[in-house]
Structure formats: C-alpha cells, structure tokens
Amino acid sequence: MTKTSNSILELVKGSGIVFVGMVIGRLLGLGAQVSIVRELSPTQFGHIALAYTIVSSIGGIAIFGVQDGVTRFLSASDLEETKARYVQSGFLIVAITGMISTFLIISTRYEIGAVMDDQKLPGLLAIFSFYTLIFPLSRVMISILRSRKESKSMILSRDIAGPILALSVFFVLAFFDYPIIGAIGYWISLPTFVLLFSFYYSIKYLPISSIINTPPQKTTIQKLWSFSWPLAISSSFVLFLSNLDVIMIGVFLNSESVGQYRAIQPLRQITLFVLSSVTFLYLPLATEHYENSDDSGLISLYRYSSKWISSITLPIVLVTGLYSDSVIINLFGRSYLPASSALTVLIFGYFLRVIVGPTGTTLKAINKSRVELISAMSGVIVNFIVNLLLIPKYGIIGAAIGTVLGYAVFNLVEILAIYNAIGGHPFTMNLIQPSVLSITSALITRSIIPDDSISIFALVGLIGFFGIVQVSSIFITNSLDKNDYMMINKIENNITVELKRLKQTYNER
Image 1 (cartoon, rainbow, N blue to C red):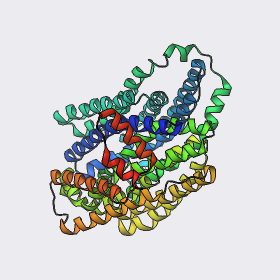
Image 2: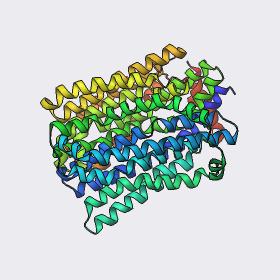
Image 3: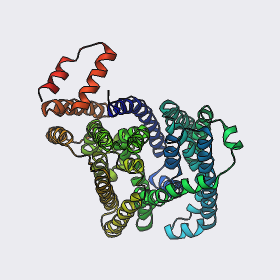
Image 4: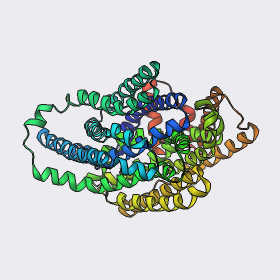
C-alpha cells in the first residue's frame, strides 16, 4: 500500500472519530445557544452577544497563530527536548499577547461602548476580558494533542467534557433565575474547562517537567514566531471576516438586530463540521507529504478530502438553507424569524468554503502561511465595503451577503496560491457531478414540500433523505476513484463482507 493510501486511511479513521466528537460538541454548543436565547429577549441577548463577539475576536487574535505553529513543528520534531522548547515558546508568546489583550479591553471598554452606543457594554467587556488570556492558552494545549494525532483526547477535552461542564454552569444559574449571569458564565468557563482537561491529557505525552526544566532557546522562539506572525495577522482578518458583520450591525442597527443575527451564527458552523474534523489530522499528514517532496501524494490527499467533505456536508446544507424558517422556529421561536433569510444566505455561502476543501490547512502544510495574510486581508476588505453599503439599506441580510462575498474572495486567493505552489486544486468531476444532481433533487423537493413550520423530526428526516440522494448520485454519476476503491477493500476486510456492487461500480469505469 502506498504512502498516500496509508495517509488517506489514517485520515479517514481519525477524522471519523473527530467528526463524531465535533458533532457532539457542536450540538452541545447549539443546545447552549438555544437555551440561552430562549431564556433572554433578543435585546438582552444582543448586549451579551456583542460583548462576547468583541472579546472572542480579540482572544482569537491573541493566539497569534501559535497553535498551528506548535502543531506543525511538533509534527516535524523527533527529540523530546525540541518539542518541549516549542511548547514552552508557544505558551510564552500567548501568555504575553493574552495579558496585553486583557489590559487593552479593560482600558478601552468605555470608548467601545460609546462607539456602539451601548451603555451596558463596558461592564460586560470587563467581565469577559479574562477570556482573552484563557482561550489562547487552551488552544496551545490542544495543539499538543493534535500533533500527537490524539483525536480522542482532543474531542473529549474540547468538544465533550468542556462544553458539558460549561453548559452545566448556565443551567445551574438559570435554575436560580440568573440567566444573564449564566450566559456569561457559560462563555467564560468553556475555555477554562477545555484548558484543564487538555492539560491533563497533554502531560501524558509531554510531561510538564520537561517543559519547565528545558532552558528557553531564543532561536526556537524566533522560529515559532517567524512561522506564526503571518498566521496571527491572517487569523485576525479571518476573525474579522467572521465577526465583522455582528460588530457592524451593532454600529448601524440596534441590540435586537444583533441578538437576532448572533442567534443564527452558530448554525452556519454546521457546514464546517466535516471540514474541521478532517483538518485535525490533515495538517500533520499533509506536512509529512510535503516534507518528503511528495507533491502528487499531497494533491491526491487534498482532492480526496475535498470530495468527501463536500459530499457528507451537502445534505445538511440543503435542509438548513432551503428550510430556514422551520429551523429557526423550532430552535429559537418566532421572535427570531426575521433572521431566516440571512441564515439561508450564510448557509449556502459557507458551503463555498466546504467545496474548496482544507485550503488554509494545505497552505500551512506547504509552509505558505503568509499567503493567508493576503487572502484574509482581501476578504476583510471586500466584507467591510459590502457591509458598509448593504447593512444600512438591507439590515442583517446585507451583513450575511458581505460575509459570504468576503469568504469567496478569501478562498479564491488560497486556491490560486496552492495551485501555483504544487500544481493542485480541489475541483474534479467526481466532486461536481454528484453535487449538481443532489442540488437539483433538493430544489424539486422544496417545491413539493414548502417551508411551513416543519417539525424538527421532519427536518432530520429530510437530511436523511437528501443523504440517500447524495450517495445515490455518487453511484449514478460513477464518481468513485482508485482511492475510494482502496477504502472499499479496507472496509471489506474489517467487516468481512464482500462489497461486490461497490467493486463492480469502480471496475465498470
């Protein structure tokens, strides 16, 4: 079996574990969001959501790209002492940037409140400010598990134990009639619990004594900094690309509009479930191909990942996008129904990110992290201009359009950079043909079954139906390739059942 085949097998196995964990984590996050939204009015939720959006954006910037740098250098290192130095350097960098961020939020909170015309914002920002120190530390700790390909430990820390305990904090405070404090407690305690659990698992692979006892090395810090600072700037732009719409809604509109728009924001993330689960293991595997000068193997891994990420995600996208009214009514209630059109725009727009596959992670693997700076900057500029033009006129729908167009430009630049570097791109007929057939079938179904307060169980049933249509489309269009055939053989060996029809489909090609 070739190295590429081994990489794909490892990617599929590990990604399946991560996907299940991420689904659980996202469902817990969505459950928390739904619970918080149902306890608060759109205006109350808008105040808290705006403060959290500002602080989480700054907290993401405070990571300074270090988490990906630590993952990459740990994956490429063999000596424990070298690994300890990279982890040590990572913690040092984010501790400094986190403390600076916390200080800046506290010292400028009244000015921010004046710009947003929100009198409650300064107090909320002061409470949330410590998030910018805790969150970066938790991401660096997770990067240790990622470099070790310890997907089970990672999902337990980040997606299961942390969210469950944080959600418990909200439920306890809401039970005693403190839902606002509970919402704040949920968002602050979440990265805290993740940090504690990931620390517990990480010290098994890299003892804390080796990090403390290893003398700091200036060259290691410089190397990690050199790799990470372009990611820091680009991640800043990516965060602005994700959150600029909420901030600009806060500037141009009111707290109620912020609450309505922020309520649907987590739903757009369902399009990224599979993509995010794959990138956990994709980075170390892709890095190994690149370090071994195996561009053809990297391209094959890239295309294979992109195809199946899109295929698995599409049914969820079709149901959420085409039946957005029913989704919002079931989850948040009719008071949030004005955000349904914006949800449709976001869901289908975010699917464009899914189609191109793990572009950003591929750039990191081939050591082109600085390209993300250009792509992210381009996307933010487009997003800002479109928001500036459309939000005052079209409200939250204009914000959604701005976000989608910003990401479209962002991904286009990334694809061009990857093609220029290794000659590969994600687009194949095996990706496009089944998707076209599935989308056509979904549009026909939508014309037959209108979006008229469909129950949550019917929505789940539609996802299953569209999933069957997508799988059928893959066979109808003969969209299997040699890597799929390799996976069929692997599955056949594991379950001791001969998959004759699948083999026949491949051989007929």
